[in-house]
Image 1 (spheres, one colour):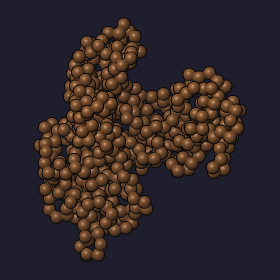
Image 2 (cartoon, helix red, strand yellow):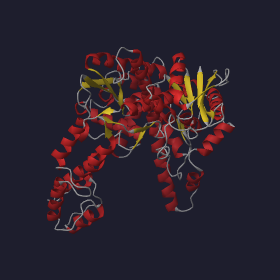
Image 3 (cartoon, one colour):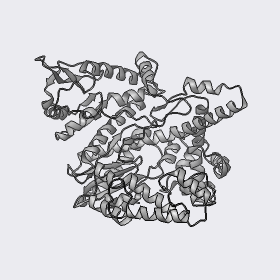
Length: 564
C-alpha cells in the first residue's frame, strides 16, 4: 500500500493544503484524496502510518524533518528524487521517455573522468517549515507526484533485473529516513570535553582573526628556523619559498614529502600543520556552528557519491578526526555500540565473482590472513597490498608484481574488476550488483579519445586508465554500499521492533561500513545481537544463501575515541 503526499489547492480555495492519496501497487488512485491543513499533517500522517503504508513524496528531506519535530516517525517511504537519480544511471533500465528525460537532466562533468560526487543543491535560505507557511515551496503538486511515481514503478518493473533494482530503490529510500532521523536526534557531543581538548592543545580561545597561543609559538619557531621573520605559515606558497631559501628541496608542503627531510624547521612545520588542521576543521568556530544542546547535527546526503556512498554537507560528519573523538560521549546511563563490517569490499568481491576460493579465505574473521595463508606464504601485508591493488587499480610497483599470483588464486573475483576496468577504459558504463549505474563516458570524453598527435594520445590514454581505475572500484564499492544500506535498514527495523526504548536509543552515526548505536547500558548486549543479526539478514537479502561470511566487529564504549 502506498500513500502519496503533495500540495493541492485547499477546498476553500484560499491557499495550498496537503493531500494524502491512497494508491495501489500500480500507483493508481484508490478513492478520494484527504486534504488537510499543513498544521494537521503530522496528526494525519501518524493515523495513516498505523496501516504501514509506503509514503510517496518528492523528497524525504523536504517532508520528514517537520514530521519528526512534531513527534511523528514513519515506517517506510519512496523518495522520488533519490529513485529518479538511480533510474537515470542504471544500466538495468530499458529506454523510455521517462528514463531518457531523467538521463538528460542528470548532472554531468566535463567527461574527463566519471563524476564522484552527486551533491544536490543546498536548501534555499530561510526556508519556512511546512507547518508554518503555505506549502507552495514543498515540491511538485500531488498530481505530479503520482504521475512520476507511476513512471518509476513501470521503469523498475520493466528493468532487466527488476527484483534487484527494486531492493536498491527500497534501501535508498530507507536510508533517507535514517539520515533524517540521525540529523533530528543528533550525535551526543560533549562541548566541555571538546573545549578542554582545544585549550590543552592550542591554548585559550583567541580573539577572532588571531592565532591561538600554541600556533603562534610554533609560527615563531618556524620563522627563526627558516630565517624568515615575516613568514606566514598559513600560506603554502610562502612556506615553500622559505623552504627553498633554506636549501630544503621539496615540491610541495605535504606532510609525506616534508617527513623525508632533515632540517630544524621540519618538526615545528609538521606540528603547525597538524594543529592548524584541528583549528580549521574542528576548532571553536566549528563547535559554535555545529554543536547545540549536547548534539552534533550535520546534514547527511544519501547517495551523495556516485557509488551510492553517503556524503555530508558541512560539519564533516563522515570524517570525525581522531583528535576530537573523545568529545563524542553517550548520555548518562547510555553507551555506544560501535560496529564495523570487517574487510567489507573484498568480501563483496568474493560474492560478485562467486569465487569459492576467496569465499574460503573469508571464512575466518581476518580475510587478508586467509588470503595470505592460501597463496602468499602467510604474509598478510603482501596479501592485503595485492587485493587492494586489484580493487583500486594500483597495478604498478609491488601491487602489480603480485597481481598475477592473485589472479591465479582467485580468477573469478579478479575477473570481475578486470572486466569493469576494460569497460571503463572503453567509455562504457558499469553497474553494481543491485543495479546502481556508473554513467558511460560523455561525448566529449569520447571525442578526446580520437586523437591525432602523440601528446594527445598520451592524454587520452591517461584519461582512459583513470576511468578504468574508477570503474574497477565502482562495481565493488557500489555493491558494498548497497550491502551497508540494507544492513542499516535492517538495524532500524529491528530496533523499532525491540524492547530497547526510544527516543534516545537510535542509530547515532553511519560511516560507510560502520554503525554507531546509542542505547541504555543495560541493553548493550541486545543491541549487539541486533547488529549481527541485521548483517546476516542483509547478506541473505542481497545475495541469498552464499558461503561467505560478512563479519561484524562490535565494541561497547563510553567514548568514541575508544572504539578503535
